[in-house]
Image (tube, rainbow, N blue to C red; front, side):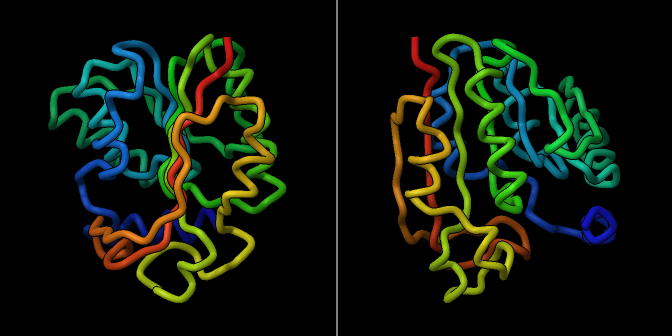
Length: 199
C-alpha cells in the first residue's frame, strides 16, 4: 500500500493544491490558534492551508514522496510545516497535545481506523476539535473518487460508535460535488463530521 501511494504521488494533480472545501467552510469551528495534527495528509494541501491561517501544523502520512511534495510546497508558500513519515496504527498521537485533529479522505482498514479513532479523544486538549470528511458506501455507485472497497468506507453508525467519547457538533451524510484533482472529481457521497472533546 505504501508503495502504491509513493508511486501515485509521482503523478501530477492527484488531489489538487486547494484545501478540502469542507475544511475551508468550517475552519471557524477550530480553535483560533494552536497545534493541529493532520492525518494521512499526503501532499499537504490541508496542512498548508491551516499553516497559512497561523496554526502550528504537523502532517503525518506513510508516503515519504507525498510529504516531500508537502515540504516543497510549504517552502514555496513561506509557511512552516512539520512532517512525519509514519503508519497511523503505530504513530503515537500523545495525550492532551492537539487543539485540533484533521482527517480528510483518510480511508483506513477497520482494524486500523478503530485504533486511530480510539487515540483521538485522548490526544485532543480540553475542548479540542476533530474534523473529518470521508466517503460513505454510496460512493461506490458514483465512482468519482476514493477506495473501491466497502470496508474502507465510513457510515454514520461507525462515527457514532467509534467517536462516542466526543461531543458531536456536526454530522451529515450527503451527496455533493467535489473537485479536488483528478482522483476526486464529480458528484460524491460523503460523511462530514465535527466533534469536540468533552470538558
